Structures are given as C-alpha cells and as structure tokens.
Length: 280
Image (spheres, rainbow, N blue to C red):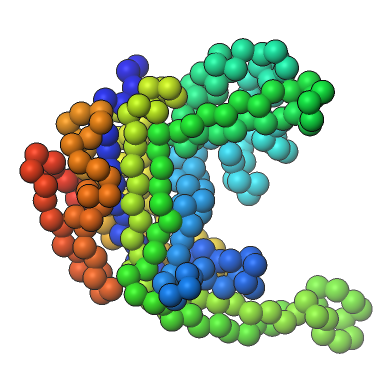
C-alpha cells in the first residue's frame, strides 16, 4: 500500500453544553482555560479520543487507556515487548535494528504510524534497551473556544462515607464538580505526506481519520461529559493536489470563520476544494 500522496488540512468545530470537556488536574479539575478565559481542549485529549474511537472500530492501538485496554498488558513496555501483542523483546534490545523495529511498529499500530511514538525502554548508558523515536505525519492543535467561557462550580457530597466507621462524614464525602455552561470550540490539524512516507500512513488511513472525526465524542460519556453534552458540529477537510501542498496550513486554516453562536463561514482558495462533513 502506497503512502499518502496529498497534503491534508482539516478543522473540527465542537459544541460544549453543560460539560467539562477537559479538566485540569492542577486546578481542581476545572475546565481548562487560557489566560484570556478561552476554553481549551488539549491536543493530547483530542488524540486520546481519536485513539479510543479507532480502537472501537477494530484498529490496533499502542497507547491504550487503562479503562479501555483489550490485551491485558500493564504497561507500554510490556505491550511493545510482548510476543503475542507486540514485537517481542528482541526488537528493543541494545543493538536491534532501529529502522526495522520502527517499520514493524508502524505496520502493527495505527496510532504509531499516525501520531508517532518514542520507544524508550532503557535506563542509563549501560541499559540493555534502545530508544527509537518515530515522528508521525498527523498533527492536531488544541481546541479553543470562540469567546471566554462561563464555568459553573457545584459542591457535591457522597451519600455514604468512603472511610471511617460511618459515625461521621469523612473528608472524602465533600467535593466539587465543574462544567462549561456553553461554548463553541474549534481546532485544526494537518497530515504531512513526507512524514507519511516514513511511517507508511496511507490514503486509506487518512480516510479512516476523516470518518472518525465526526464521531469524536460518541461512546465517550462520563459524569463530567454526559451523553449529548459534547458534539462535533462540522468537520472541514482540505485535500491539496500535491505532497507539498498548494498553500500553507496557516493560510488554509484561516479560511474557516466560526462565530460564538456556532455559525460557520468558509472562504475559498483557488484550486483547493473543501469537503464539509456534518457531525455524527
């Protein structure tokens, strides 16, 4: 299968209503915001959701979350070195052929050939391991809201103490829950054909990503994100006519104008078609 032949840019418009789209553990798990008050969903969070949706559709994923792993491997290292679920220990020993190991990893795991991965399993100069960096062709930016978001914080209590003899409320029975009342977020991404050549990321892989993006928040419900509170409104997909791209990604991304109420306007560039895909 040949690697990706055309540069791709894309954008995702997201609606958040009464949900915590991405909590900040260093700030009491409040929804992330920048210094200007704009809501933020980090690129790491978005890639996690992409991995989860890909895994649900049957694709092999290397970085599996603990609550969704399907192979029983306790760590990334054991997954990589597993004879059954990975490439075997020999592939990561000192003196192993890095390019061969990288190629096999890209062939086996979708997220490795898409996002890249660093396989670093040694400890110090005398380690029996090897460090193998893989740079992926798919990059995605953090999503930011179109205007400052309003955050509501609610104090909550447990009906039963988690500790003690039950004679009095423990400190663990009190807590806080936070949500964004309403917000429109947008994020942008690109897929680079030059890097795709090195990982084997193909046109078929790109089509898979295009199919997954509108369903980014399906089967992702939690107490912080109830079903229906996170929604992809629109995916915009620009496919250039060459590997280098007809225009810079920055220029392409500026074509999309999203209003705080969710109204979407899309400008055009000569020779570059935009495919608009409604959310799932």
